[in-house]
Length: 278
Image (cartoon, rainbow, N blue to C red; front, side, top):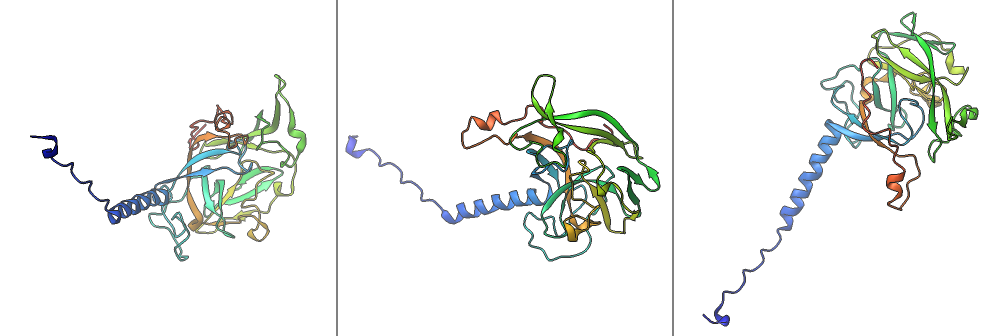
């Protein structure tokens, strides 16, 4: 057989663009389903949950523990409707991502009180159902000063100081609160503020009461939604439970790929956030 008699190469099969588009659609649909029903990433933009969560922390938030509402999908496309499917109340002490009643923006706070609970602040001490929640001073929390954590936005700039090594830090007075269930967590209290004293409030049916761990720098259920707070939050506005950090950035990253690594906080990898008792 001569070279001219050799079999011609097989023709390249044409691309089935309709099939390619369909496969891409299914992939996007699967991602949205996981994002809406299973878990989603979350970014901490403020210091309202210090010292538990740093500005720049990246988290995984599970969507299923509290069931689903019209606000569960990744995009707010469903009409407003009451209740939750497979709904379950959070536990006191859970760190929850919620939708603000005012603008449906994501917030992250700690669940303090459930329907029927009476909650009050007295001179910076949390009272739950007529009993003071133990608040014990512990060692101050030192957070290295960085691009996104410079103490300037805090109520008292005097927290900016240096540690024993000469490193510039934000040093926050820290206290451990322990709920009646035994679940405990750290809070920051910089001093007396108006929100350190509230009237006794009974959480209505179908609502929850949340607070930030950074008690002097959190717009939470102590404040009326008309002035930027959360008020008593409807259970429909629960999005999910914060489970663990994935990584954290100190705000110094830029378009330079090297800074993507130098900005990483080495002590913030995969920290669990839903411990029953710390």
